[in-house]
Length: 256
Image 1 (spheres, rainbow, N blue to C red):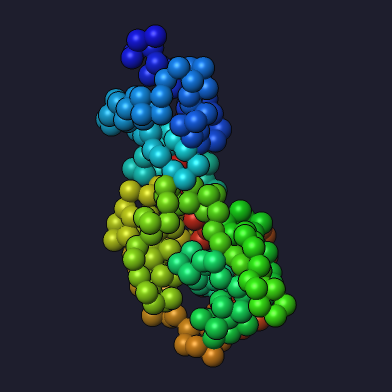
Image 2: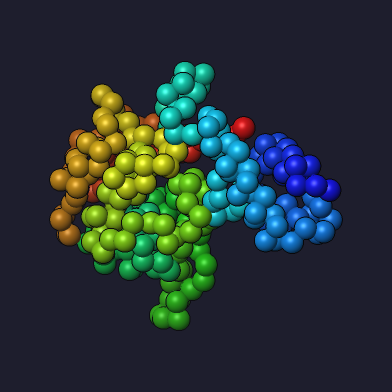
């Protein structure tokens, strides 16, 4: 099989797949006759072939996939004008702590946030497929250890946790995740992620990130912002953890 035919096979498989495909699965297409390095070289060639198109080939945590470019979102949203689920600031803070400090226990998260974390927040993040229990700490009560999943990275368009912005402060980490969710140019402008939506008026991602930073709660206090109109798919907010209307980082990317 020549190079052109091999690229055509890879291209077809990736376009038809509903999920990202890792290199080991792509090798099956050729009965393992092509090595991993050869497959990666062909994938790099395909990426170059699609550079001038509205669809791009990217590598995320679970493998390779075709997706629409961020610039196409404005047009694709006209076909499916859906409003993504909204998450509370408490949920975003908890997700940021897990992403940057993993593995962590619920007690660790509460120590960092300075308030009690409702079980529903962790359940919401688990149900979304963003966090999971990976073990238990050898301590009294053997508390569960939480970490992020490959789905979390896939939804943000990241290949690994190393691509998260390097930040130390929890408030900065939360704002960074909000920026990633909004496709903020200051964080990861190339990410094709659903932009945050305010309950009353649309805010630019950078503006909303600034608002989140200003409104970040002080330890030991309740973040008592006025609650946004809840989305029917949201789980109840925690008492003392008010909703700031942060939208779910639902991938903008439309599968080809």
